[in-house]
Image 1 (cartoon, rainbow, N blue to C red):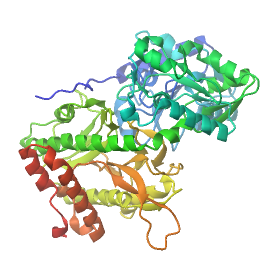
Image 2: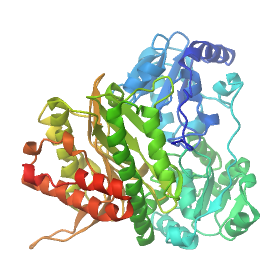
Image 3: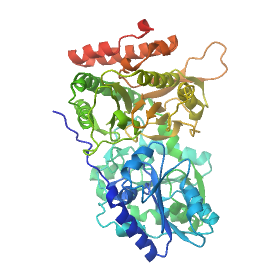
Image 4: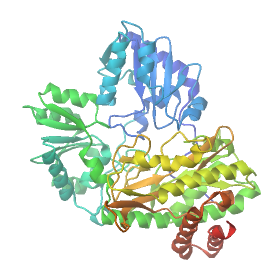
Length: 612
């Protein structure tokens, strides 16, 4: 009945092979007279999701998460992951081979400085290391009285005998009815930014920035419609687009040739040196540009301007057409979510639903909208203790039934041509206990605090993050991930520069789309997360206001499980928000679903304020 077209449930990496592969890497390092090497998750663009041919970290260690770094020395090794992956890493990686360290609290640079022996030679791949990353490695080696060496070719590639080929997915043009702005206008805005910052040119090293600027999409990266590519945009003259010509049909090539000089990726470094020659100042994105690009500019006599990608903020502020598309995509997604949640509510108590079946069902309901292009990331579907693994991915080996008394956390998203979605719901299977309801309600209070926030222009995400955590903090609880991330328009589900996080320094602006997703995770027991996407909009100023104000409009339409809420723990304002939200869900989605789903939806969105 249900099938998954866009995701599989096989174990993509094999921790059992880690020992022989790490041993092979050590042998290769010895051959190259290196005493250690760093293996990041990143590809040449610092993509979150990488093509199979770029997943050196997963192949070497067995770790399948989207953020991590391994450091291999002659006598010891470590894997560094952030708080989303600490549990997952322990299950996927041979801990007797690689020590599991926290990427933020105990970064690899500290470990290298402490464990690298004086006089050692430590290697790194400059094409897959950022400028800041290379500088941190240099300081760590200096502290250890060791020497840092850029490698001309990656040593992992020398031992990876069955490495998949690079992707060659066809590039498509994004119609103006979806993009809302021509490429000519976008490139003009980039040139305006170059002029303002007194820059001669900018390198677009993030494929999402290239895709936005040239109104193109592709399928080179899993679940993100990106064509792997680079671009150089000069302040004057025609830009250059570096992309494998085999991806371009004649129609696409002709359209792009009116905007830029089309060249092969192998020509990129030489072209960059030519643009930089004569002391020209070139902007490199500090988040995605590699240290190899900085070296090329400096070798040509150019000046590196390290800073924010000029496209990132332009792309983050959606235009009216993109905002309209996001609203339509979320309404469509809401229909699929309602059908799924109604089905789950009926079938899970019977004992026949497992995590894989739930994932297949939700993807099927989305495909039946007739508009689904892909999922926006591998669905996280954790029942019981699996819900406590923040980025859990179910496999045939780990698949678990949804049992009475479980909480089931399902975090999923869709890629539609008019918008990208990301939503998490935590659902009770059978009767939840009091602790589950209490902690679910604390998370909900934090979610509502963000949703109801009104804040002045110029506010950074870090200033709002604590609003979501405060109810948990008062109970001595917290969660080890950010509260929200930016979301692209048929692009990456994780988009900069803005985020709701302790580290979110970028200011928020009307037109940005963010997630609102506080959570709580009890190891080996259950996980809770409630996530909606929100659009930043102008807020009506109160009488006497001296500042322009912003607020959030919730885009996601899906009921929040009333069975998990303790109404007595919510204020009247919080109850009012929840009931108004459920009324909107009912108003928007009920006319679009079948009678059976509609009946379920009406019951699931019944006002709670009567019970308070």
